[in-house]
Image (cartoon, rainbow, N blue to C red):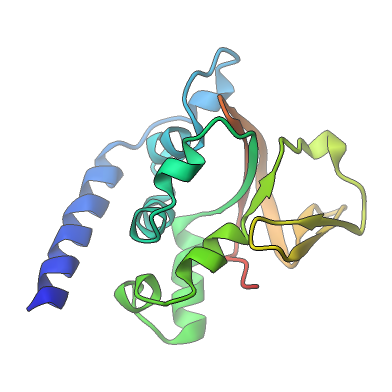
Length: 164
């Protein structure tokens, strides 16, 4: 019964987020929204937002930062679910969910102009990701939209979920 209740709450939360679709506020140079609000407003990060909520990381990413977030799209999460053969609910119930999410966050504000080929960057999961240029990638995930500024850092949109 509790699983059904959780699934209904999650579905309502994801529906609410999908109605808030819009353009990234970061394209406005006077952006005052934090990383979480910027991503939610974009409308392409419903699964990421639900995962952050489930892992109790929303408040941490609303903090002053600065943070650099490699943000996988909903499509990236769908691809991962197929690869792992699990449902969104099963993914969100993983014990290592917070660690997976922290693997997408780097302390400090790292803009694309700061990147160097084969650069290693330590994430908040205390593990490195490797940056490649031409094409720009984080590990094997392509950066599809870089440098979306937020009040407390920057978001780089990626097309795959990074697994530590």
